[in-house]
Length: 241
Image (cartoon, rainbow, N blue to C red):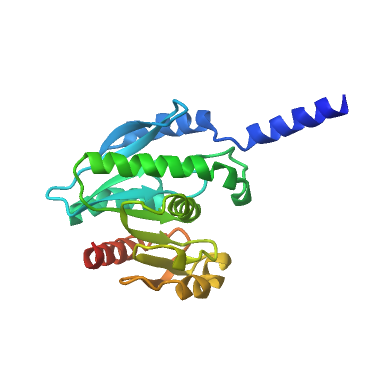
């Protein structure tokens, strides 16, 4: 009986940490009616689950950019929405993808079990943009999305991603392990774990073209600083790709 209860508890725990597909569907149902820029695309995982992407073309296009949101939100949220809609005006087609979400009360430390699925979604997004004919693909990720991206890069040493913008990375990521140029960008008034680990992230920025920058007055969500964020990201991509 004791072993049965332990097994039930284990299975319950694993299920609690599985991606919440119903919540993803709810996000899609709320977001899609208000999307005026870009087109919805549905990408299929190996397990049959389809996740939402918002694809915005650029003509002519310099490159394709995958946008990865932070904890528990959706591909048209906040600063991600600004980047996905306005980067195409600078010549960068965007694909903003739904990342795995957990229950609304889940914490950041609950998310690592979803990182393998996150890596699969990024891989599928890269393949989608490549299939659209983009020779160069970059990734721009925010907050928890930077950890998901970093996990993808660790699992995919031969990734065709040409550049990575890590916005407000809330961890001491070892950037030296990456091969592509990296732009580590954060706000002056960002979360303590972002600011406190900035030096450790900067120490690994050895790749040609890699750099770190701080946006004065910006918080973790770049509220009121969307224009500055867009200009920094666009400017670095122009120099790098």
